[in-house]
Image (cartoon, rainbow, N blue to C red; front, side, top):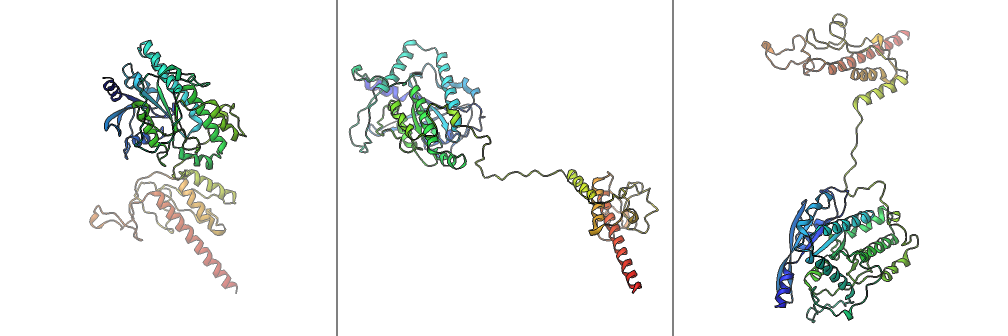
Length: 469
């Protein structure tokens, strides 16, 4: 009968997973690897992201009894606006059989202090709001204290055939065998099994290269979070899904805490990126061993005084920096100022109405345009003195672009229309479309006029030199 009750309780156990406690991050940008971690525990290779309160499950198999059950997983979004959904995952019916995982990421160690304290506060307020029997609440707290007091060192027994002693939650333990709680242990007792999981420990190498973290920084971080776990009675796991560190051990530990399945792995504190500390193992004396390697920092320093957020977050992606182009008119105006400073005398504006210059440009290149429409006027060579290197052409070019004037499409010159007055596109003598804007025609006209003037000037100088000879 008792065995049947234990099995029924085990099959109905649930554990609730709090997503990364980043109160400042949005639903789509918590980036702490919580979705990947849950998928790893499930054995799923293609994790799916969600929002709000998600539900999933993990298949749990007891190799010793050949039993299988499903471990319900409630995934609560890290946005504080979704904390009102917590009562669906943690309520009066499953309070005594719920395990909570608080997740933080090694990519942002400077946010751990605020994140963990915030979510412990959320859990405490939520538990106070539940209509729990005071006796049930006290029994849950006593059970957690007993877990700490009854913890004993275990060896890494790799023989699966060896006999294993099970320790169920409701097993009675002789009070004479219990050790007193160590100093600072379980100062905050919520009556919940809590596991603090640090994800993405493979990012430590990036912290060393880009943020100049040293071993004593990681020792300071570890001693702080171990003190936090000691005060709140939680376990601690450093994991990396990318490098597959401690993920399998986390799965085994969860099933051990919930279903009482065997867990023979002792505490691991040697590798800085694969720390494993079961609930009840740690103490202030064991934490103080880390102080021996901390010379530039002290354990008494405030956490955020040593682990500071960088002023500008360096991007992890390989995206190229976006180049902002300068405004076209601002660029042309700047070039005009440079030409003015070089001694260039500004000539007359090239944009003139067609009516004003109808009879004054018969000798120059003709600008195609319809009667009555505004058309640019060519520059009188006499009004724009030439400068060395052809700067006059550049000046006229930039002036024409700066003094744009709106106008309809210019009509084709005489004789350029399609035969029979059709609607075909008229062509100029050089094969270009006659339906061009006045600005483009002005540029071509100005350039052609200036080049003709320069050519005539060169020919004139050559004639004079020959006559002198």
